[in-house]
Length: 64
Image (cartoon, rainbow, N blue to C red; front, side, top):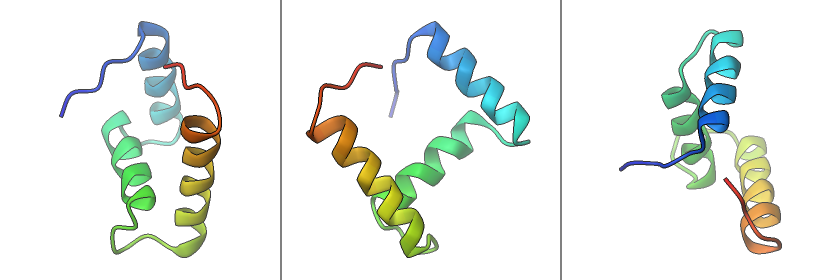
């Protein structure tokens, strides 16, 4: 799967990843695991991921 992001978004994600000593890939994987309720994530994380998804992709327009 390929994800297309604006250059600014990629750079911001890299900065966040470096700050938290992880990688952009791991951040995206963790979020998707929470959103899809993959075993291993907690219910709080699932709720927050779903809330974000609901707010940004269903209730309003999403710009990446």
